[in-house]
Image (cartoon, rainbow, N blue to C red; front, side):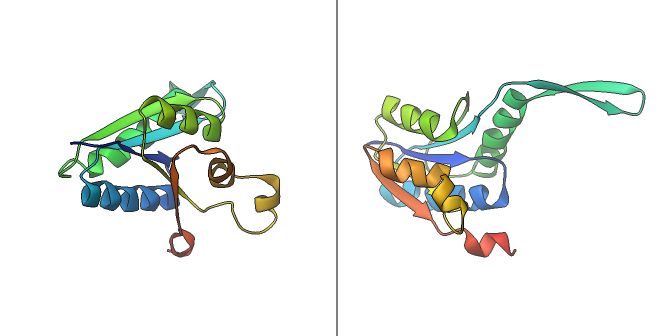
Length: 146
């Protein structure tokens, strides 16, 4: 692959997975690597009981699972796909990561950009105002009703 990579933020939701599929189309069309990044805002571990067993589940595990699950669905892609998991404020960490890999474009879904939440802030809104690179905001509205 040549050129600057494409970075997409995912959180395990159907809408972010849809945004990732659009990012894959973009990366494929441009012949760029795709970095799938999941960020959880708080690091904690929770004990979950399954009958007599207790399993520890952490936000790092869920974050890693979100990016790895998307990457595994793209295993036959014609571009290099990288799964990344980070902890921190999602918009800040996505932007820092995109800067660190010298990304050409960062892709996010538009969930949270409508209604009252757009005034309170959203990851995509924050990124669109602070990014130093191109921002591609995927319309995920149709995925909310799917």
